[in-house]
Image (tube, rainbow, N blue to C red):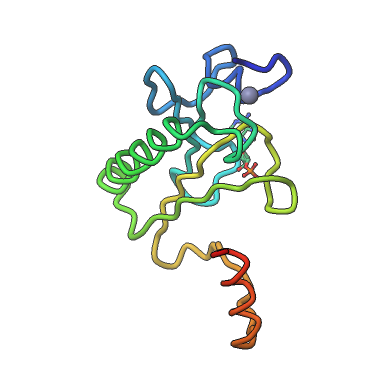
Amino acid sequence: MKKDDCIFCKIANGEIPTNSIYEDERFRVILDMSPATKGHALILPKEHFANIYELPEDWAADVMVLAKKMATMMTEKLGCDGFNLVQNNNECAGQTVFHFHYHLIPRYIGDNQKIQWNPTSPTADELKEVHSILTK
Ligand code: AMP
Ligand code: ZN
């Protein structure tokens, strides 16, 4: 299903022109309009899923295979030195467009970009508590 008021639905389905670098039955890959680095691209499903929680498992499997293929092709063509795959879900995690998308971010030595978090220092007990929540 598409969502009428969703810009990424329109872009993914060719209703709004964009710099498309790949397309198949399920996905379109476009250049990000405010790239972190040269070549920063987004994988967009052609169906509307707001986030990873809504994305069906078979689409999730396909998106990872496509991300690997795109990262390989882009690294060869752009000559980048590394690569980040980033995927944000919900506002508190930095999502600004609420149609699932996977960021493909080529990295270059000295590119001065940061995709980082502040490491914290939980105690062994605190780690154990999280472990117990996630394994019971
Ligand atoms: P996120 O913060 O993970 O939701 O990422 C949204 C990304 O979409 C940002 O990197 C924006 O620069 C990018 N973006 C938003 N609108 C467009 C558009 N019309 N065409 C290309 N990229 C877009
Ligand atoms: Zn959408």
